Structures are given as structure tokens and as C-alpha cells.
Image (cartoon, rainbow, N blue to C red; front, side):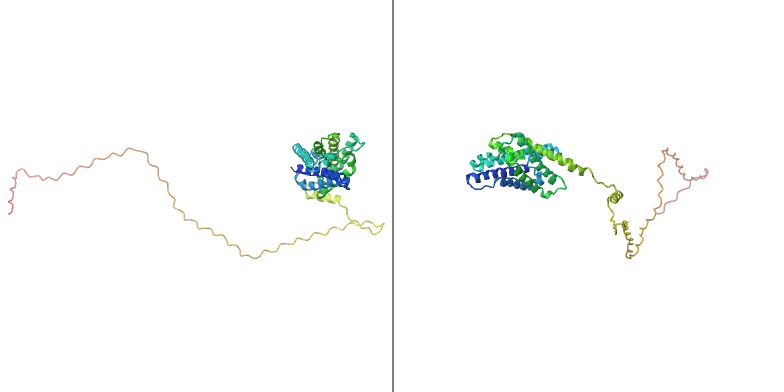
Length: 338
């Protein structure tokens, strides 16, 4: 969606400026702002919209720029398709909106702002002009937006100014589209497709050439010299080999003085003694419980044995018997007392 908005801004502002210039020059018979005003409208619109969407999508607003990012392995193929589709749709929507809301006489007089070749300019010559103009644009993009050493905060204005001077240079010859979306939207809205290769192949070739030159001669130098220190000793060794000592010469014939050795490091200060604190009391062990008497294990139950024989009880003693002599007669019983 961000790339749709970016392309919409650029095409609407550029085509709208061309239509407004035509309205001022012909319909109202007044002095128009001419090529300078048209160039500034393109450049300012692009600078503003890039500043808005740069942190979202990068602010390409141009299929040729997106293709260069893809070839440089800075954009995936899936993202490339989404970027190009959004940019073409944004340019097409802007062209039809200009055709719908502005005066038809002014819109038709400029062909909805579609780029066209100047008088006497051939197809091949026009394509070369578009290649060079796009080369300048994409080279600046790589220098200020891709290279981490570039002024990223000034990138939108640097890119917008590049578009401005490109249009001032190539506008009279090819329209200085430098952008397939800038050509395709007005071309469909106006139905003019003559010399289509100039504005499709030219910007793409120029963008690829600029990215290749910058990646090869400027970015690869930095990437080929990584600085990685394994430990402090290697870092100190590298610093000693690369740093130059300061030499003081008093006269042409005097020998250079050696740099004075660095002052010795200050002696370490012993830490202050800790504040007095009472010695910790020894830990008191809890009283051990009294040992319990050892308990003997219960004897195992005896194996079964038959009960012992029971002895017969002793015979009961018989009462004593008195023997009477056989010759004595029985004793008469005494009478009972009344």
C-alpha cells in the first residue's frame, strides 16, 4: 500500500503540473511556469512521499528501482511482485483521476501527460537518454539510501533534486520519465503507446547499471575489510602498527626525538578496612535426645511340637478304717437325752 501511495503522489503531481501549465499557457493566456515548474513538481512530490514512506517500504515509487534492488539481492522475488504491482496500480489510478477531475481540453491537449519523444529524437537515442537519466537517479539512491555511510536523513531531498535536474536535462527530448509507472498510467489513460520500449527498457537498464557500478566499486570495498578482534592483545598490536608516534624536530639536522613513555599506572589503593562488627556467636547445637534402650528383637515363634503327656491324677486317699476285734460284741447305743 505504501508503494501505491508513493507512485500515486508522483504521477498525480507530475501530470497535474503538465495539465496546469497547459491551462495557464493556452486556456487563460497567461505566463506558465514552464519546464522548471514541471520539474520542481515532480522532484518535490517525490521527495515528500519518500520521506513519508521510506521507513515503511523504502520509498521506491519506481519499478526500475525495485528491479535493481531485487538483482542486488536486497529484495525478495515475492516482494518485487508486490512492489511492481502496487506502483503500476498507483500510477494508473493517478492518471485516470487527473483525466476525470481536470478540464478535458487541457488534459487532452497534453495527452494526460504521457512522455513523448521530441522532434527528431529516435527510439534508440531516446532509450539511451532514459538510461543515463535513470543511472543518475539510482546512483544517488544507492549513495544516500542504501550505503550506510550516506546521509540517510537527506535522502528524500537528494533523490527529489536528482529527479528535478534530470527533467530539466531530458524533458524536452524524452519527457524524462525514468519510471515505467510514470509512463504506463498516462499511456493507458490516453491510449498512446508509441515507442514504449524507450520508457520500459531504458529506465530498467539504467537502474541495473547504476546499482552494479555502486555495488562493485563502492560497497564491496567496505564489505571486504571486516575488522574483528579476537582478544585485547590483537587489538593493541593493530593499534601499535597503525598509529604514528609524534616526532618533534628542533632543527633540520637534529635527530627526531622519541616519544616519551607513558606514565606508569597509579599504584592500586588498598581497600579500607571494614567497620568493626561483633564476632559472630558460635552456633549452638540443639541437645541430642537421650539414647533409647536397645530393644531386643522378639524371638521367633517355636516350631510346633506335640503337647507333653498329661500325668494321671494321684488317687484320692481313702478314709482310715478301724478294725474291731471279732470277739467283742457290738456296743449298745446310749439312750438319747430328753
